[in-house]
Amino acid sequence: MSAETVTLQIPEILYQRLVNTAHATQRPLEEVMNATRFTSR
Image 1: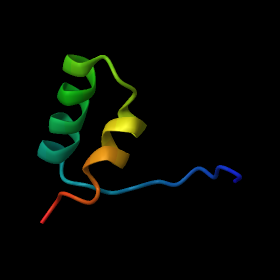
Image 2: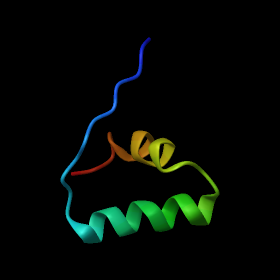
Image 3: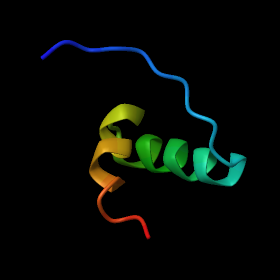
Image 4: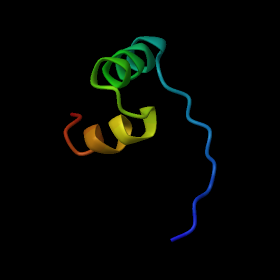
């Protein structure tokens, strides 16, 4: 599978939550985003 770069426009509060989670769990931001994409409402 090839990878492509995309730009997302998301609310600042959501971005900060993702960054904080990535930092707290010592995981890459991309991994955190992939893990949460099916659990968001």
